[in-house]
Each structure stands twice: as C-alpha cells, then as structure tokens.
Image 1: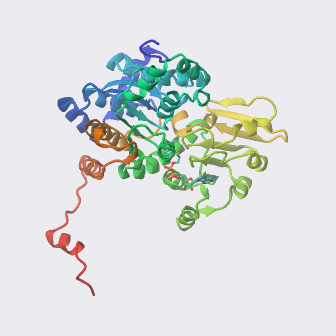
Image 2 (image 1 turned 180 degrees about the horizontal axis):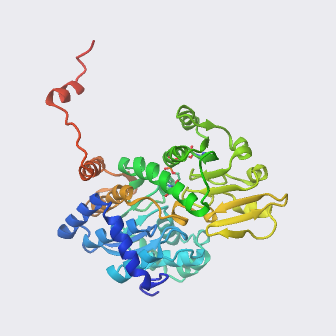
Image 3 (image 1 turned 180 degrees about the vertical axis):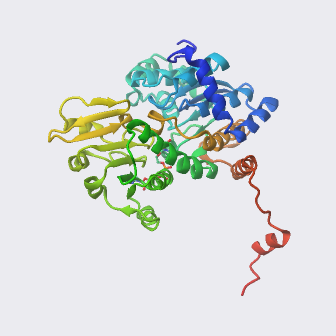
Length: 443
Ligand SMILES: NC(=O)c1ccc[n+]([C@@H]2O[C@H](COP(=O)([O-])OP(=O)(O)OC[C@H]3O[C@@H](n4cnc5c(N)ncnc54)[C@H](O)[C@@H]3O)[C@@H](O)[C@H]2O)c1
C-alpha cells in the first residue's frame, strides 16, 4: 500500500490554516507538545492512531510526532474526515494518513489495514475498531472481519499474525463505546495488552462528551437542515454525558426537550433537570427532531418510524450508526431516499410520510459539522498525549486490563486548563486541610 490515501493533496494549505486556527484554542496540548519536543518521551515508538481526522486530531498527531513517535493515522469513521486536514498532515508534516470523507466500508477497512501494517507498538483508538481488528486477526476469527480485510489477513502466515500483536506494548481509547468494547474484551479474557480509557478521565467526559457533543451536535443538525429549533419538540435518546449536554443546548435554543432513557436513575435526573421524560413509543408521536446518543442499538426502530410525524428529522450522535435502524426504515419506504440537501436523505414511507435521516445515521456532529470545538479537545487530547507517555514509561508494569487515566494526570490537565484560561482558584489553608481530614470536630 502507498504512503497515504487521501482525497486531494492540493487542499493542504487550507487544512494547515484551519489546524493553526484550532491550535490557538489548545493551550494545554501546546505546552505538552513543547515539552515533548525537548524530552522525546515517545522516541522510537510506532503509533497507529484510528481517530476522527479533524483539525484537533491533527494537532495531537503533531504533538506525538514531536515527542518522537512514528505515526500512521487512519479514520475512525467513514464520514468524519476533514479532507483538507488529511492533506495538511501528509503534505506539511509527512504523517502517513489514510482517510477520505465518505469512504465506503471496504476503503475504511483498507485504511485500518494500513494502520496494522505499520506494526504499531502503541494503538490509539476511537471506538476500538483498530484493536478489535488486531485481535480478530491474531485469533484467526476472519468471519468477524470485513471481507477484504479478512482476505488480506488470511494471506498472512501464523507467525506474521502473531507478530503483529507481539509488538504492541499498549493502547489508549478515546470514547465511551470503545471503552465498553474493551472492558468486554477484558471480561472475555481476549484483551492482550493494557489500554488506558481516556474517556474515563474527568477532564475528558465531563467536558468533551457534555459540552463538546452538546454544542457540536446542535451545530451538525443546524448545518444539515437550517431548521429553527425554537418551539420544536426535540427528542434526546439517552441522558448520559453526551445526552445531558445535548438536552441543555437544545433547551438553550428554545426547543421543548423530551428525554428517553432506559436507566431509572438517569431518567429521574432528567425529570428533576426539568425535561419531559417518556418512552420512545410516546415521544415519536410528538417529536419534530430526534437525536440518539446512547451507544446502543436500534434505539429508533421500525415500530417508531411507523408512528413518526410527517417531516420528522432524525439524527444520531452516538459512536456507531446502529442507533437508528435505517434498514427497517428502508423496508417500509417507497424506493430509494432522495438526497434533498447535503447530509439529508428523505425517505417516503408507503403511507406517504416523509422522514429525514441526517448523515446516514453517523455521528452528526462530525458528518455535517466539524466535531467538537478545539477548546474541549484540548483536554481530551492532552489526556491522549500524556496517557501515551505514561504507557511508554509503564507498559511493562501494567496488566492486560483497561486502566483509568492516572488521577494526577487528570488533575494536572484541569490545573493547566484553568491557568490557560486565566482563572484563579483558592488553595486550602493548613487549618482547612487539617479540618477536612479530621473526624473529631462536630456540633
Ligand atoms: N458525537 C460525538 O462526538 C461523541 C462524543 C463522545 C461520545 N460519543 C458517543 O456517544 C455515545 C454516548 O456516550 P456517553 O458518554 O453519553 O455515554 P453514557 O454511558 O454516559 O450515556 C449513555 C446513556 O444512554 C442510555 N441508553 C442506553 N440505551 C438506551 C435506549 N435504548 N434508549 C434510551 N437511552 C438509552 C444509558 O442508560 C445511558 O444513560 C457513545 O456511543 C459514545 O461513544 C459521541
């Protein structure tokens, strides 16, 4: 395979300008990059990264490169790549990048193959497609692989397949869905190296999942449709970290927000936060706009499409495109959907209703918008960079488990972010430290 596979190298200058724009909002990552340049903590390490190819990711790649890593980058979603950024990484930073916005499944996995052929010492995943492919190949479970990746893997000798895994000292994982998959691998005893769950850091999910997904999902829905949110019934499926952010941002735009949940605690929290909470069966009768953000499958299913209003707008911001059962909608529709605007496919049901699916059911904030703003990705990717450094230094002491980001790294990122924002906080006095650590003082 060649050194890169991108849409158009001529877009590099525009991509570089947008990378620089994002970098201005990433002061924590900048400090890490400057230290990495001097200390080279990743020297000699081959890193295969499978991440959304955005301006923020590009800045992370540059930081890792300055830390001495030899990187290959592949997309973690067929629709999330920013082609100009991919071009800038190849043209201006010589980082082999394999990502084309709108690539089909075969190309997506051809690109994952390029990341595997890099023979990584470290993996950096967003959704665990890279690590799961690596394990299926090593286990010889070719039936679980996309057919073209399977046929390549079958052509490798047993030694070559095992060798691919032997090199890996550890990995990191960016998102909730990936962490769930990795913990399932650990429980099934198939996880073969330690992985740091970047998503579980407080400086990641409290900000990225909540404020980042909240804002950018609204941005994606508006860019795709240009609808007014004020006065609309906006249904948010899932009231986890992302759902909370999305619900609060939709309310801020004047929408009537309805939350659906399966977890009684989260549902209760949504009720007390002032939202209407009901089953999806009820919500579909009144919803104008729907957005799933659960990490689950078939949250919007055939029975829901049957009851949806004419003109409903349906999007997903959860990791995989399985939250909306699009095949079920296809079955109850007349002919193929029409692309009525970029990222808006309109299905006409056999009873004549129009249902609009945004971004093929893929993460709408990355499909039709630019993903999270750089300021939150600053913290997420500071976690990635410092976790990679931690893994490089400590992999030999770690077990084949999913680890949290060490608390001192998490706290240091919060401190650096506040410092960069010019926000000062109080420091506990010795008297307060003593008081908070004692049990003797009472009424
Ligand atoms: N769009 C993005 O850029 C972005 C960013 C971060 C995370 N994610 C992804 O978004 C998804 C959610 O992440 P999170 O951090 O909010 O997870 P979370 O675990 O905090 O929340 C998910 C919520 O969905 C609920 N849920 C599960 N099945 C449901 C169903 N059938 N109906 C209604 N609710 C249901 C769960 O009870 C839970 O409260 C994951 O797939 C994650 O990887 C996307």
